[in-house]
Length: 87
Image (cartoon, rainbow, N blue to C red; front, side):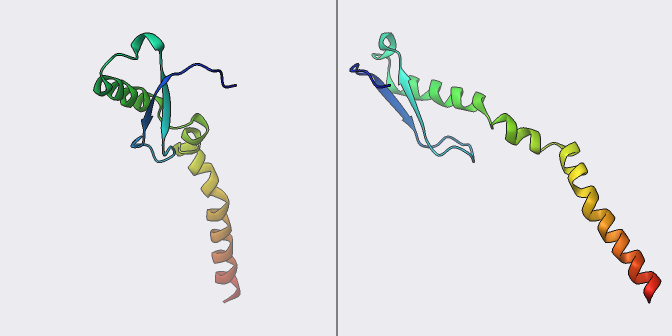
């Protein structure tokens, strides 16, 4: 919902994150007079703490990829054994 209140917005285009292209942060009214460099520094620090979404992090674990690679390995071994028996 958008209200008729003006806010200072900081747009961060270099998020240093492969998943997010831009971030828009609304500055609290009591801090609108703070220097823009300080606000940008704090915005970058905040975005660095956010990191990647938890669902993506979970899929990158060793256990996930280990379990996911078992069926193709077993299929390859079975195919190799079948070819070895037939020829």
